[in-house]
Image 1: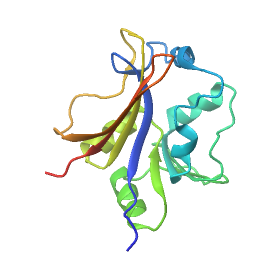
Image 2: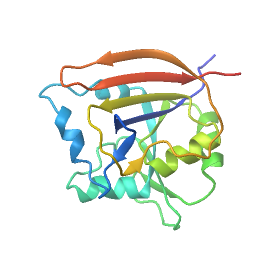
Image 3: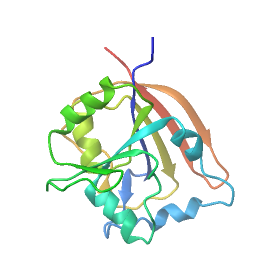
Image 4: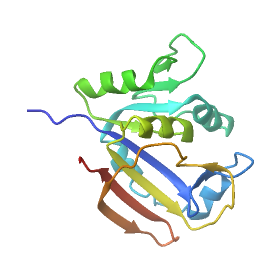
Amino acid sequence: MPTARKLVLYIAMSLDGYIADANDDLSFLSMVEQEGEDYGYSDFVRTIDTIIIGRKTYEKVISMGYDYPHTDKEVYIITRTERPPSGVFKYHSGDLKELVLKLKSQQGKNIYCDGGAEIAHELLKNELIDEFIISVIPIFLGGGIRLFKDGRPEQKLKLLSTKQFNKGLVQIHYKMVDD
């Protein structure tokens, strides 16, 4: 029997819990860049075939001069404004919970939540995230966009692994615990 698809939040944050600084800047992430080290990202990407990403996060990546890297995957850009699909990109303005439950019921690899904080919060409120892979960057930003917002139910986690890297990044991998 095939294993159920999991929704995995794979994201980086500062030690004080921010995914971007007060100016929506992500340059703090570069402090852990190291030639030949992708912190397990390539291995992770092989386990997924679908991505959920918030419109603001998607536009931030594009505004930084990058092409969106996952055009070989099914990509859902979560937005409040209806838009027609464009290539592999499907714009979803409907109910996020409904979308995730539909995707989880289908055959396939895991589903990657690529941010941002609003999408992660909505998924947490609805208890839809199965696993968390969080890379903690060794910096206190002191403000900005917080990854985990208040107003969600208490959820227990089980630690699956921790990894530490030369540049000070610590990666933690948790799964949700069923009560």
